Length: 226
Image (cartoon, rainbow, N blue to C red):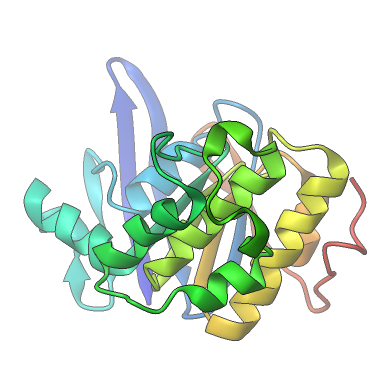
């Protein structure tokens, strides 16, 4: 499904990714692990089309993302890709329901009620982000991303700003919703325990892949350590 081929990326004189290659299959849950500065977030940004590499290519099936123009990449992200970040990036002037509608309407999706129910947002659907807890805001961000019905969902430290109980809850939602929708997940995290939920774990160091491991048995959000 996704083929990353020999990509390199530098910022000024500093190389961040160094000839990295990686393949993903439809429905994978891939976790990227590594210390700060290892290149995890840069790899996520390139795989998702937010950035382009200095060299190499990223293919989605037969589409070479790195050959597309900026406008074409924007259209591709709109149609194919969802994002969840550590910061929630909710629109403060919109209610919970309206924030979710933004994601739904980007994809021409009129049916997002199931997400409001699945993520336990019914009672706060008319509330504004300023009145919500961190966990509630992250659930809204997840619903907004999934309302696009993305083929691939990229997550950059989605539990980094949450306490353990809320973080487990959010991971549980994400895992269950993947089971229902078969969306492909790519998650950057510093939390080694979260890697036990994935089917594939990529460890990075100094802009290169250090190891790729597979979990024959995947743990639930309630079973992992923290």
